[in-house]
Amino acid sequence: MIQYDLVVVGSGPAGRRAAIQAAKLGKKVLVIEKGTRVGGVSVHTGTIPSKTLRETALNLTGWRERGFYGRSYRVKQEISAEDLRRRLLITLDHEVEVLEHQFARNRVTLISGKARFIDTNTLEVEKSDGETLQVRGESILLAVGTKPYRPDHIPFDGEAIIDSDELIEIKELPRSLVVIGAGVIGIEYATIFSALDTQVTVVEPRTTMLDFIDREIVEDFTYQLRDRNMKLVFGQAAEQIERDPGGRCRVTLQNGRVLVSDMVLFAAGRVGATDTLNLEACGLEADSRGRLKVNPETFQTVVPHIFAAGDVVGFPSLASTSMEQGRVAARVAVGAIAKEPQKYFPYGIYAVPEISTCGLTEEEVKERGIPYECGIARFRETSRGHIMGLDSGLLKLIFSLKTRRLLGVHIVGEGATELVHIGQAVLNLKGTVEYFVENTFNYPTLAEAYKIAGLDAWNRMGEIKKEA
Image (cartoon, rainbow, N blue to C red; front, side, top):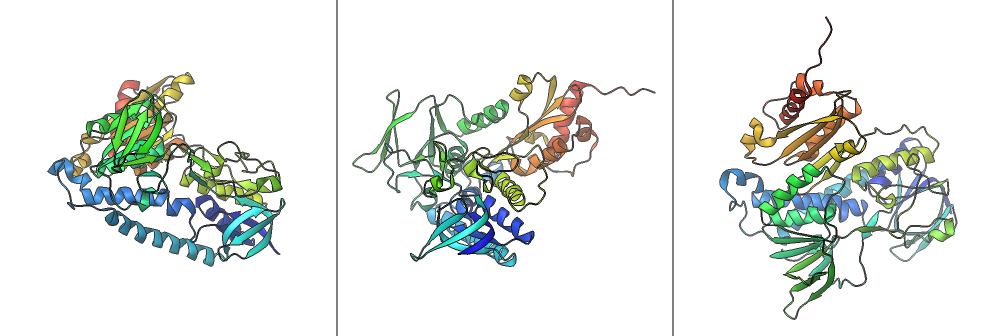
């Protein structure tokens, strides 16, 4: 039995960042990955595939050029599932190659197999060839990620009734699609297929969607979706899903309405992939959704030398935050100092259009009783927006009237997930409205929207009168 300073279960964003961090601190590190290739869900079925699919769809459809050439404009007239998969495979191969090189360069040992606890320090690994071995870790990090929630009453068949992991394997692009669930994953895929000219209907049992996003941004986003004929059905749950003799899918809602489509994507949540870990043997227990409870500062579980990070610990379930969680957990696990991360981090939704947000929403500011003012800029007000043919896109800044500090930045539109980092920096550096008014931005850029929004708020707030 080989002893390691840190054993990491899972090689997704949290696992790989933790492993490399511990290795750079001179520790002996093992990564156990149940998949045939490193990278976890993020690389193979989640983050990278969905973003690659999005970019491919926008490129092949000519989506970004339709402001100039009309809605019928397309770069490739007949787009197939194979067109999408071809670019995806190239991207995934590159990601895996980079990760394998990082592990090799940092002398991280990698074993392919399924891990389960024997006791609090020992894991049994069943390798793909059937061989089993046992490893011990002074510390253990669980970064096993999540898998799609698949309730028993949904007749998944891998062809027409599928989950989000199966979506990248489809053989043909559907002419019509019903998406069950208006969470981040459901909305991302719904809008991507809408951009591919698939008729999309989204079904959500709640009366709202994306509740953690500023309401004004969600309203603008919703208007854009409905403007391109996406159907949004809120306040109705899907009671039954079945395929008729002709192979089409029928979704029956609570109110009796029946939706007929070529394909159904069930994207109503994910569950932690903890069911095969034999957690009882190490004194841990997952919640009803397979998630593990941790100390949010150290990522320690109730067993102090066992850590958990990434999607398996719940919100915000972002690749970016998972990486930081893994890094912090690894430093604590090997006895190194772990600085507290910056307060504000960006949240990105890679829908069409993108949404990104950082800081407080207007609703949160109101709840806290903070006197505030907002500044708004529309991308069509910028020269860069004219050059790109944008007729939509919105940037919203929220400022404190008392301190004049930026409280939140919220963006919907082209490049939102890139633009948000300017606002994130100002938030974490405690900048004020004057930064945007007095700073110079490259011209012409979409970043100019920050100056426009800053001036919009500044005009309402009034200038500070300095004493002579």
